[in-house]
Length: 310
Image 1 (cartoon, helix red, strand yellow):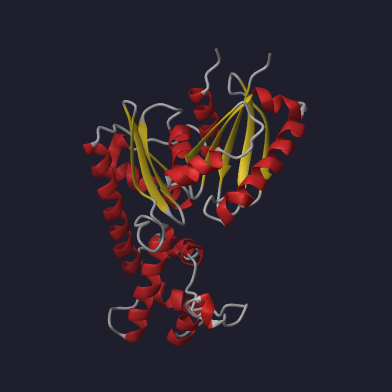
Image 2 (cartoon, rainbow, N blue to C red):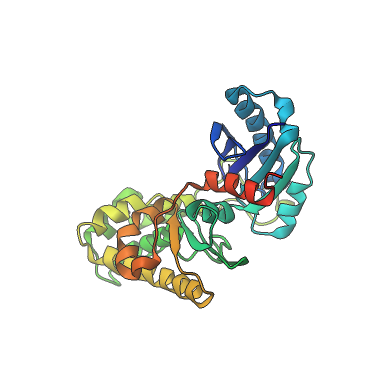
């Protein structure tokens, strides 16, 4: 009887699905919609994975009934809370077995080929995880408002704040701070308007809670400034250099945290993290390794580790 493994990399805006054979050879990949477990109780994620499963089996030319011989592992955005993972695992899946992880678990498994090691996700958000001799050590990943220190969103927000202070004359301006003001409307007033976009739905009734007209920008809006930041960092802009020192200081704290728990290597994933690799290698030496596989393949690796062939 054939045995299959299915992995899911469930992101906030889309998910990716991979079907593999028992030797972890990829048979087909498919995509789906948003899949954060914190959105609508995980219902959109359930639909995305269900639709994506049909697509990936069709692409592989395998009867959908073979889901009964398929062992699945999902790495999900919004899966930081054990209760969210447990509830999602209990949904009526067609698979032989299902295991649900936080998305950083599949990033770590992919980066180290399923072996021990640490990983940081440094993208719009940030988080950290290590496996050391079977022990799982997780840190960060608490979101934009109370965590995500290493993230592009936090650095982007700090960049906007510095740019406004520079335009006010409180701190020295630079080409980067002037470029940020220009990008966001050309004046401090325009930047303030940008920072509090109007809710297109208009004001909500008072009974619905706080007024909806001061939403504040989403983390991705601040993270979108990171390419501009790097343009000027590469030119030696003094504000960019100072902000990079702050960023690396946050990463220092996580590296020290990993080493205190016995981790011997660390990989970085995420668009921002990938761009930081030359600096990380220069700063931490052999402690930094390149990822062996993408997070999606990490999900397949974990599926096989959890449900090995008999």
